[in-house]
Image (cartoon, rainbow over all chains, first blue to last red; front, side, top):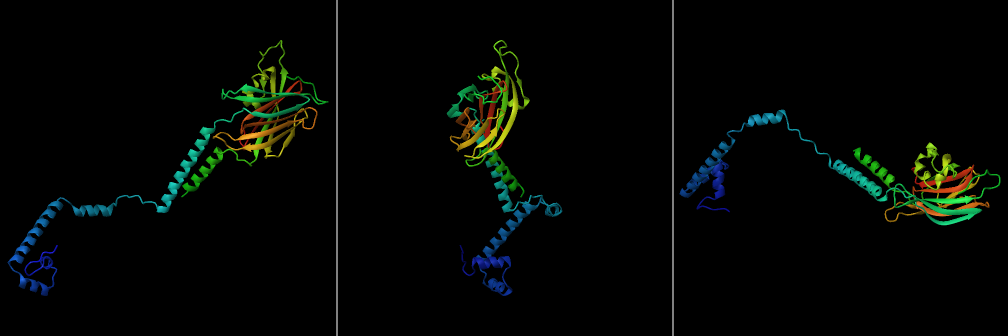
Length: 164
Length: 168
């Protein structure tokens, strides 16, 4: 918002107060100063004084020279961020390892040891007899190990032997 | 910068360890051929401590239970490692001169978060008067036992396990 005085604008008066005007413009402004403009200039002087006082109070306990000197002598150790591409590969590696481990664990847990229980679909024998036996499985009480028992007669020329 | 390839390698390793073999890949099957001998007579009972070949100590829990308690010695005669591809039979000769043929019929996919299942076919003495042919389905890595073939005053026990490469 620009508030205009009778003769001088706020902007022009502010620039005059801050010393930003050329010599010709300064003479022109000074020739046009009236009572109200002078009051506004006094208010600007007062505001500047307050700011300087406040800034001085804030900075009075700070040793800027020491701070700057310390920064120049030992810059803080800041880890260099890896390039974006490398960060992506690291993430991909971690994800791949996790996924592979989870996949292997999933298969290991859901499969368990193989069963020795066979489903005999056909059994043909000639020259003897055959049957299917099942013995308890030590690893799994609910399963059995299958034995396909065949008492085949010996071929001529073979040694003697007993059969079940 | 080195973390990314390291993490990716770690991830790939975990996936490789976790994922069972997929359909179409080859499997490694191990067949242990064991001789069970020194049959226990009625007079002896089952008192004597069985002698187990230390190379098959991991099968102890199976071989010291019935019906194998009828024998007192267990010796590993042979251990066959077969690269098995779906539909391609793999054969080897047993100590009793019978030919054993193992075939991966089908590699069943993962269902319900459990192990892959394998449909296998085992043939013993194929083409001879005394033969066995069986098809069974078992977990990948599971052990199936076949026993009863007479040999050297005892029987043969075959322990078969197939997986994607790691021995079980």
